[in-house]
Image 1 (spheres, helix red, strand yellow):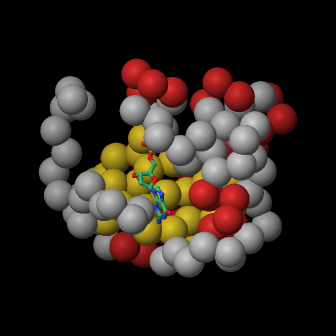
Image 2: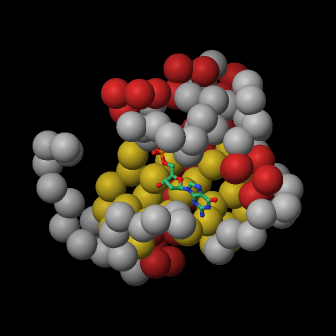
Length: 114
Ligand code: DGP
């Protein structure tokens, strides 16, 4: 896949407000937040879209979701609730083609999404 801005953030060539990092993933605040808490959890492995997730990624994706829940707790939004979103391709509204999990919270979310 073509490299994205997120690869530069992973390599620390681009600044980001990083809130969590381990050997497999990185979490940082979204540059255009859509909610008081808006954090992106991304794998360090370059996976372009949700369509590119394979069975080998099952543990990684599970760990990303658990990390999102841990960050939500740390951010103080776990009790009130939050939303986890993965946008995929054009109709899903995916702008950056490096898989990422949006953690959104700090205000009530509407449903259905626009
Ligand atoms: P999506 O539409 O699901 O592909 O969301 C991409 C998100 O990435 C969008 O909410 C804005 C965020 N984003 C794009 N470029 C940067 C950047 O350079 N730094 C940070 N922190 N976030 C970025």
